[in-house]
Amino acid sequence: RVHIHLEKSWGADKLHAPTLSYWCFIPGMAFRMLKALNLRSILLTSGTLAPLDSFAHELQLQFDISLENPHIIQASQVWVGVLAQGPSGHPLCSNYQARNDIEYKEDLGNAVANFARIVPDGLLVFFPSYGVLEMCLKHWRENEKGGGGSTMS
Image (cartoon, rainbow, N blue to C red; front, side, top):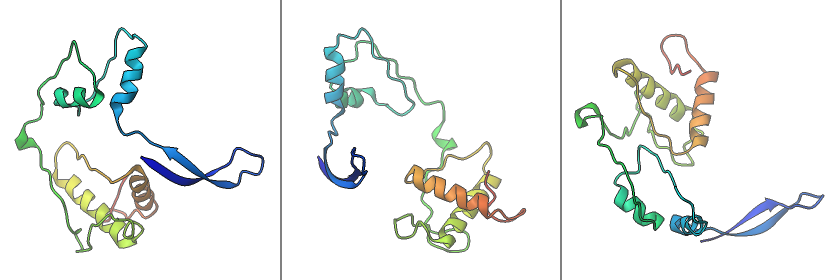
């Protein structure tokens, strides 16, 4: 993939200059280079790489030794869903235009806080990016409401 963007130059003036970048989205190319180094072992660990067959295919590697354990969490212990709107009815749409909307951040925070009150042992909440996560956390911390609102720490 080819990507053209502005980047600060290396010169003393540090002006932004158009930069042409070539990106490779085939992880197997990088692993072929590692394999060429005649490494004795490559250790990959993760809780989300299963099934290993498809992962090995993506990396273009043969795993001589592998260990894949079953999940310890039962399907009855997990709820996966999408909330279209928050407690006050504001749409929970995290597109680029809506991310800076204060009502969006408030209702998202209140929805997470409400779930945290009723779900035992915690939540796993996914955000579209670290930037959105940090923006929401900053907003919630700066706008904490005693007892009732979106209280995040």
